[in-house]
Length: 478
Picture 1 (tube, helix red, strand yellow):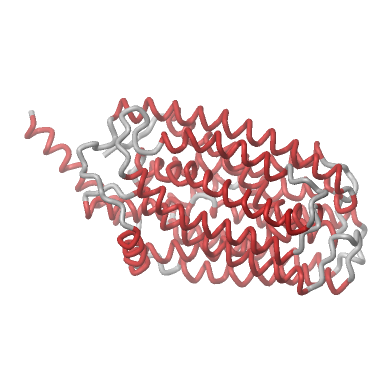
Picture 2: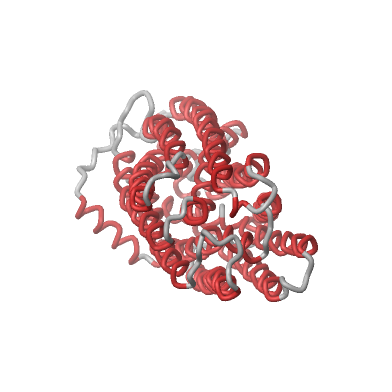
């Protein structure tokens, strides 16, 4: 059993998520606002396009996970070949999406968005699913898995902050809702930088971990290759959902993903049209959110060692709900407080949300990795890729449903991208979408995570037995 990974191995693995995270966060946070407020596509059409692509992303995850589990490439191993080709395709498609011609008719823009998102989500799967499974492969140990996920989380959150910083430099400092042409060029510039970062840091991870994979021979290439059968894959997915611990993490994270979709997809609308923040102010608000998440990482790593991961995660979700409650208060009094003062208050509220969100970027994946590792010990088969695919399929399915609903809700409240100042009824609708959507689904996430039953002692006990088996095997061999 591999454990006590070198610092360099954890560092080089984690850094691969930086460019990928920055690119993904730009899409997740800004594509709804870009498509509706900047490009003028109706919310329902945007919701349909993003939902379809997100659903396809979820469907393709188990497929790519299965393929990576059964790949026997002597040069790249199971995962790294998919990641290598994926980063170059993602980088190209990322630039294409943001370069949508603004002069096209609305339906043409819709199909540009739809096919662009379908293509990039397919490429994302080729990188993202094997990348997540690689962490389970190199660090099956309970504590090392938490550390690896911690490194990955730090770089992921740095990547999440980057779009806000880039937005500050490439967007106008006044309301971005009234500068369509200039704003689109800003998004295109950000896309070029994200694509470059994706390639650079992706290659660092691929070729650095390649040395580790070869040196430690972590894959058993004598394992029988499993024939792909879609029906068998879906049966495996259903069986996974029947297991309580798998189900609690998968559904808990899916509900948290829905809550995050309400915040990130409508958050730009909220801060622009309700709080009347400029693009530079929104940049600092988002930096406060993700800055709180990255600054809290040492705290969550410490708490996950002092208490069970489940308990630490529930505490983090409670902090997010508290931060949302504080933000609701600022929303109700936004018309009576000067803009600059409200800006500083909003930053404080988002820091609370960020501190809570810090655990969401690492602990659920670590908990899921524990379940997968225990299952692997029981069965003796490495299905980390397929299990990771099941995980991502579920939360992508949840995300697609959420985005579809959000798109229609924007039309229901009569959001009009051509109006720089929205009616009070529209502003109230935007606030309701964000605050009620976030609160309800974070509470559901807590209810699901509370069902998780695996404790640290359970994992360590199994790992000790495996270590004894390995020692005995070595003695018998000698």
